[in-house]
Length: 414
Ligand code: KIV
Ligand code: ZN
Image (cartoon, rainbow, N blue to C red; front, side, top):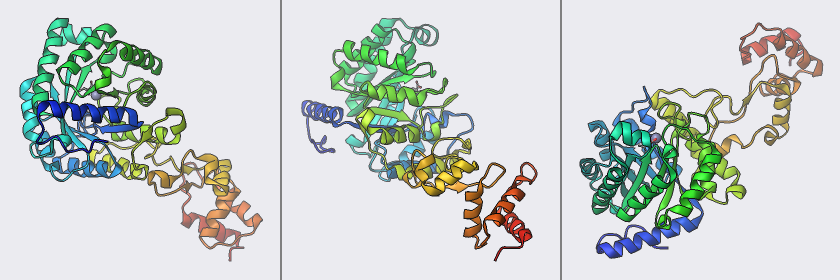
């Protein structure tokens, strides 16, 4: 394998050859690279504004989890984004830091300035330009060929300043397929090292992803010169499923956010994709290089700093994921946690299983908790406490004090 960090001192041709080798290595490695966009697309969520110091904390946590690259911000959009990116230089060292740019040279200049000081193999730009008929006609007011020219020129400009250049045709999923392939070809010819597929409005289904990616693989003649990234929004609740379908069809890079935060219904959730790939490695045949034990703390941190609460049912981070009140589940979990869990709390760094006592609880969980509290009741005593629990008014929290009270009333607790 070509070691990273060897661009400096080489001429353009040699750098091109090194890049091709690195890309081809990644494509063959079977490793899925995670490109986290919590700090950019995630922060676009109304109300999720992060201060530069918050972004730095999240970036460090993402680094610890093993993220390959970080979409660190959109320098042309705000000074706060520039400040946040600058604060990461020399501090967040392992992931590649990338900056978002429109296909506008001044955006690339702003990214170059914000990322100054990071080594060439750890800094990149991610350029986007709308390619769908809606974007061409109503937003950009440009013809097909004008958009292709904008893409070629801006990617070529970016490739003069950066070794890592990603191109994303915004609204790719609603772009005519032959034209989409032309846009990708133009970007690759101009020097893109990654091509992204943004499903900007979360419109796609897994079947459409498969069909489209097969078409792209067959109709972008230079596709083997780049990495293929996927970027799905969640408007139909399919972002994770679409991401996994993209991986099955050869995507190498997953763009996602912690807790799935982002525009409208959000993005594919990093922790959900990572766990699906980890649990089903046999199916996907790829490795997710993520330390899954960092996922739960990451999820809590992002929720705390963005102020975006987690639904109790949110996979991995939600408060109900390792909690149950149902008697049959509680009994099973006490006998073997795997009976009612797809993965153990420790695999994602969560605190542990929580057996909630309530009307649906059974004998086992009540006996277990009484024992933990040092209250030694016989079978009849446990059943009486359970009866007492079932008679409490709706919404009563069965805490340890209440359990002690109920056990005390039985009078047999030792
Ligand atoms: O969803 C989207 O299209 C984006 C682009 C900026 C890549 O986030
Ligand atoms: Zn997006």
